[in-house]
Image 1 (cartoon, rainbow, N blue to C red):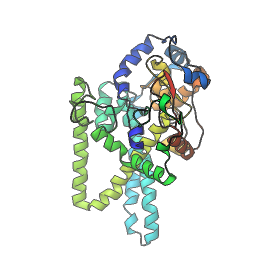
Image 2 (tube, rainbow, N blue to C red):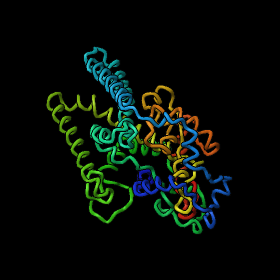
Image 3 (cartoon, rainbow, N blue to C red):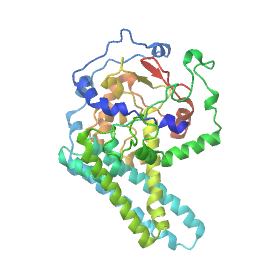
Image 4 (cartoon, rainbow, N blue to C red):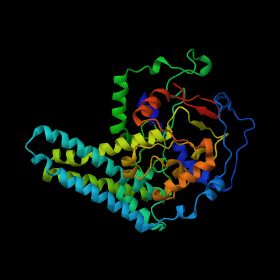
Length: 389
């Protein structure tokens, strides 16, 4: 059940992003007349009316400048560190002490997963055209980062009552909850987290499990003709598939040369660590009990862009993850802004958004547990809705 709830992807975001940007440029502010905003009123939440122009004008112009050479320096930085870690790990099995080997391998997996997540972030930036002002450059660079960059506008969705198997609110004796349906033991919750934070992302990419339903036989990010993509994206998907196939071939050849266990230790487990960070970061960016969500009657680009949570994972992780977590609000508003200007831009964005800028200082483990337990579903109706449990 939890897999379905938290991997129900908002495919609609992909279709509406272009329209949203156009709407933002036209500074359209939807009228709240007739909108169902009861939940917002009950929680004392004021729906913002700021414009993209107000935010953009508050940010220094140089923050929007993309420097290809500087961007490439971060790629070199990450690859060098990943290479050093790989090289050092090659000596682990030659250490006589079994206990020390059992300590050093997890250390390598954790460190390599952190560094390689940074590489994924740079690939993500390529997909948003934030890596370089040269149009063709980022498109070719995206191939290096395999299938994930074709999902640049994909975000976490939420389960409505019907989706999670609950009756309509008027027929629900437990109202806003908690519901017995979701009374999970801590052990089962942890096992559920492990499942989603390790294999959830690859399964979603391959099968589109719990994403928006389509009538076709196979909806997948590896099917260039499926409903997820427009016709003009066909060759982008083919390039992505070719990249994945090439990497799998390299791994298969490496397994033949050095053994499957070596490939698992040096590559597969760090890859799973990257999946963990990717899912954790994205989940906590867009899932929090105090954060509302809008339906079409109230939504516009700038309101939707503000609905993300900036969180710090500590200076080491923020550094190696290129500040994707603590400056994500800026990324939502201006996705072509390079990450190395996002910290400065965030300071100015905070001034404009005021109370609508969301930063949560809650320790990450506690924030994850809170969101996991409290952000279960949203109501089937209403134009401003909040998570319930």
